[in-house]
Length: 140
Ligand code: FES
Image (cartoon, rainbow, N blue to C red; front, side, top):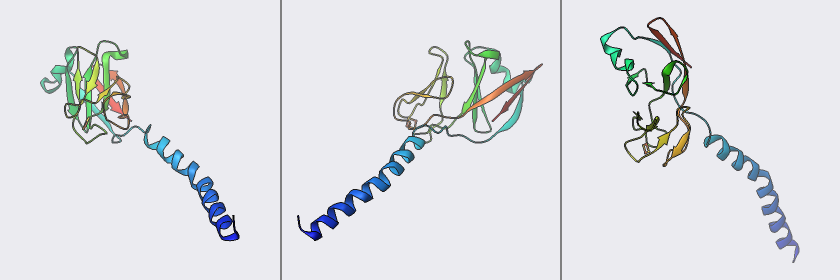
């Protein structure tokens, strides 16, 4: 190995050491960051517009969020960002499997918004749901 080859090899090796961790870190972040809007809104369960939430399996969309009546969560409600992190389709709630499904390419999310199948690269944001009488507050 002559001097020119030595410098070329050494420079490439040092460059790889310098940028390698940065590339790995950015990949790790992008694959685990939940995506969804920041929200703070209420739903009145006593109104006819929200009556569907009175039954397990019912769901509505509001403020970029899908709010679903489920059989397994505390309070019986789960609120997730409604936009699939793959290509932006609107997810739906599957009462039979108690999960969320994207109709475009079959992506699936669990009740916490984590990807459980299909092409979505990131989870969707899960929001806190609290209830006072007939008023649900969705926030996060
Ligand atoms: S847009 Fe949801 S899986 Fe492709």
